[in-house]
Image (tube, rainbow, N blue to C red):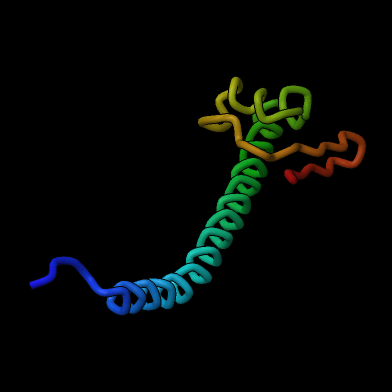
Length: 98
């Protein structure tokens, strides 16, 4: 009796593994992309909510609400919101997070 696998058996296993990988990989990439977009959207919404609370608590003044670090030290958010920039226009009262 011979021990081991034949070349044909090994090739069949590799082909099956390749087919499974081809089916799974595109869905995984889409799921990761969708999760990142969802996280970014949540970060922007958190930033906007923190800005509005900061503005209201400071007698409708943007002075202490100019960046995410100030929002954290002021207690308006639990942590510095990653990859979000704040845009404020004190003259018009427009605010936003990008």
